[in-house]
Image (cartoon, rainbow, N blue to C red; front, side, top):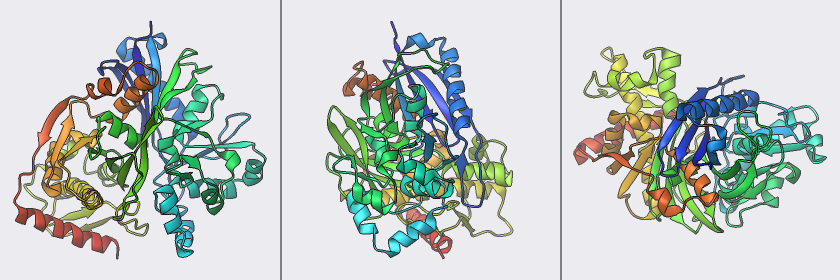
Length: 493
């Protein structure tokens, strides 16, 4: 009898697969990186076949580590980089262009034009989002307008759009299912957030034909089954889907209204459960579907910092001051403070709460005494400062401070970052024993969707590793925040 859950976590820089027991124990895990393509400054693409190949290798590797086979898998959960956009041929499943990644800024001018026309209020009220190149809508239109004959083919129903979850479901089911869940649909600029349906006004505004769009399904439930995959046997149910940040919120058991988490991945993403009403932010956040289970929808406030772990990768790959991301904490600890150096990691503009597409990465406070250690420490501090901006907006919208913030993602293992986060955000920071909350959330959703677990059982999967408490004075905190605010002003000038 099949007894394990398989989580496929398709991320920005690689694909991870986890084989998880129904009690939440991870038996096997494999991450496979793939290439990032930068055709022009500000453009970021992925090759779809490289994504698919990485998923297959990750699943195969996780099963091998778990000493399991595909026949041991009772259900599959999928979580994914959310706004990354693909269009493919319905008849063949072949993509017509590379995936345009969520970080990509090529449609910034289109977004600026829509804002100049006064469209932002209507978009925010209908979708909960802001008009920004981050989201999928303008990416879809760009592909249709820049691939020869694509718009005409779309009008004829020959093409299909999907975020990465949709692409993986299509591939895993042998092309039988074209679907996305409510969380990913809520990131497209095309879905009415209250009705959970594609909206004709938004489709017209962003020039996206309805014929392209997948069916919108709940986050947990029977979505399809594997067929003709090669690295998995036929007939395994796919029963959970959520965008990566919503999956992490679920994976951190943030089931009560007011529960919040922050995931440190390529970017940093803070979400707060706001219950069953899609309240629109007044402080620069977006409102998003958190999940839909058994006909009940939960919503979240979200703040997104586009660059977090990617800043550490830049230190490694761009500047060469570290050889691996794991080295940054040891390097940063060689100094007791950043000595006035501030790094605003706006390498792809600034997300919430600024939504400034023109902001650029900025380092201030450099002197002759500045070393690589100061820059490493300023990088970690810059990530924490970005999250403070998100928490500040979140608490203003909620009308009360956070009691606790749960953290996950690769950089959550960094004790220096976690402690500084607690200090500048003035909130207790709680880290689970397994920081792969995104994959765990996908597995939990799959278990719930397959009828193998309930919410209570899912909550019991989460174990606490360490709590970081604020440890600096109010005066020191205020000084840190002034330094950050001054640096941000320069990054936006």
